[in-house]
Length: 266
Image 1 (spheres, helix red, strand yellow):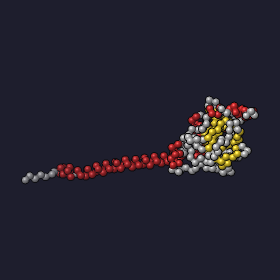
Image 2 (image 1 turned 180 degrees about the vertical axis):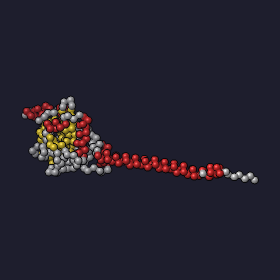
Image 3 (image 1 turned 45 degrees about the vertical axis):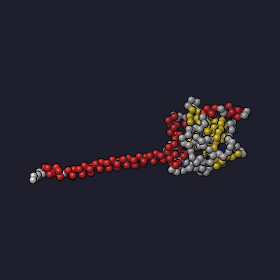
Image 4 (image 1 turned 90 degrees about the horizontal axis):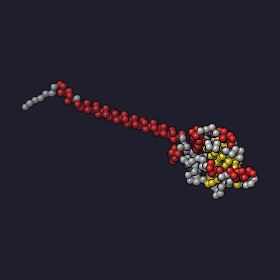
């Protein structure tokens, strides 16, 4: 019978293998736990920034759809005429002067802010109101695909400054016929209409300007001396829709009507 004895070095080599493997396994587990914790921290940071951006910019189509679906946005508010948000009432010349020097990039930033303020019911920014006398150049019913899908939109041209136009939304107007017709006169003031600007479009080729305006008091809106239409705040907005809703080309058709109306030949 042969007996073999382990030397000290052999003993240490064979006896220490279990401890070495355990340490290696422990280090490997720690590595993967570090990776997992890092990923979770990155995910938490991303979610935090994502939620901030979504709530901060509700005018972006994806953000608006998400906030609406989660019911995290207050409905468009029907302001009391005596408690409307404070803001500047701009006549046509003031309106043109305010936005005339903006380049397209600056105007995009301004339009995002105007739309955002409207969606947030002017809780952070003051509205810009429009006043003055205008002639109707076109009118049509709002439809699916428009910024507001129920009611009417009326395109107006200033009687004071021909380069300034306004498209005035009548949300939820429950009438079959247009509230105004081509050639009609309409006065926007600081007592009854409270038309707030939500978008400004510049025609740089002609120096023209068109402001998209929506009333924020809603309720009854006087059309002429006799008729009144009931305006209702929109429940859901199509923030991805193009603004302005009407175009400068559409308004050209009303130029002759304006001249005729002002000269009494209508």
